[in-house]
Image (cartoon, rainbow, N blue to C red; front, side, top):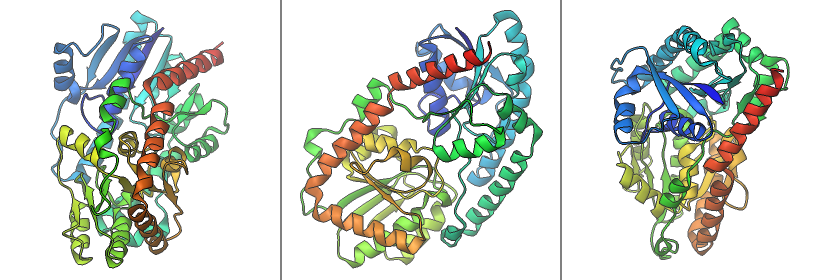
Length: 418
């Protein structure tokens, strides 16, 4: 089939949305001829990938807009990226109409951004639209606002307003109601969008994160690292853009309790972000400076090595669609400890990790500390749990599974057009 893909974020060897857009477009291009609409900001790195032979002949790329620098302030840059996405969405319809006139696409899919908050105008092409996979419907629980910095509180308030505005935006409603199929990354997203769509028809579960066979082999933990000495500190890891919603503040409270119980540990949170400085100060106030590292940049090789050497992945995120880094850590054999909310709670199973009820931050911290203490004194059981964790991701979130689910979505979308 001929498939038009809207993927504003599509970047080789990047993080989050960019690398997902890249991987998804490549995977779809294995089964179809694809035309990719993406931001001109990605042109330099995509053309480098082309020169390296990493872009197949079945994948044609069209750049929209212009490359502009972002603000050095991470929070402002995040807001800038959303404004540019709205501009991209408005600009892509005319380009798509011109392409459709000559190519006669069978269907169109929005790949990135994976959010419902901006309508995709490509349903106006008159061909089936697969809108997603989507998330972004998650709400930060009000009872946890006390763990946030003032800047993080302001961001969550702004996000709530954005969600309200999107809910009543005609372009969003028209798109969601006109889309043939809406894949969603977790069940809460499905329920929210069914209300907006006024029907659950065409809404299907579909986690957007997946891994190639090469990824799975690359992340596999060496056997010699499976059984650490019982005298070593418990090795704990977390990652992802350091925002208040990630729940790192709760993790720090749990680690304070662990320290008071004289359990040795070392926690690395490898990413920086708008909440990093606030959390570094919090770690210092809690007396954790020597046992916690927040915001240290890791190269890709250092990141992979760190994933393979840590025993626990700790990130009690309170607002998460899926959790790409969590899934990478699981694939590398780490045992996840996550909040029992949204995407992570549906990916992590009881035999390979722990889901902590999101009651309040004090209770969560206490339960996390108890799980970590159990891990230290029963660490001989962690390699077995880590293998189950890796098998969970490898067997349910592979590229083959992604391609098969994409095929099902396309068949459903085309069946609705007849």
